[in-house]
Length: 146
Length: 107
Image (cartoon, rainbow over all chains, first blue to last red; front, side):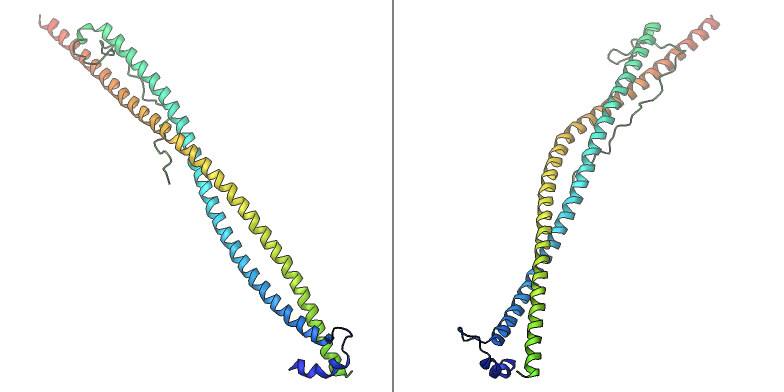
């Protein structure tokens, strides 16, 4: 409609050489720009969707990595704790074995009643059994696999 | 040229300039979004690498920790047995002493 309306003055003011009047160029440019604009809007929408996908997968991965990091550090803590527990328990067992040996040495008549390996010996009445002080608890709550 | 035509051309020109500006703006926006997507992709790649390393570490540590845990359980069990044996020995010794005393008094 506009093009038709503009047609007359356009001819009058036609730019020399090419035979295309500036208003026609303007109108075509206008239409081209509108199409370009639409294309760009579509592209931006697509890119935004892609970006939000990327963000979602990044967040998910980040969460997973954090969880894995926690699991790994929990395993390391568990390893240290279990190591400490083992040392404490071994010491405790040695003490107990020594006590039993001393006890059995003092009371040889009890040696027969003891069916245990080396630690069965006579009891010494004065000594109390060592306290249950297995310092570090084993980290039985080892991180579970996800 | 009529005033109306002039206004029409001016309008078209204005809208064209506006659209050009919009296109420029959108181009800038597009490049920003593209950069952001690239950054995300790089971050995702780095996280994936980190994730695989952490998984490997976890897989390495898990059996070791399980072994240590079972060793702790064994040691606890043997400690409990030793304690029980020690207490039993003490009880037996006490009972024996009492028997001896009773016998010596009786005789």
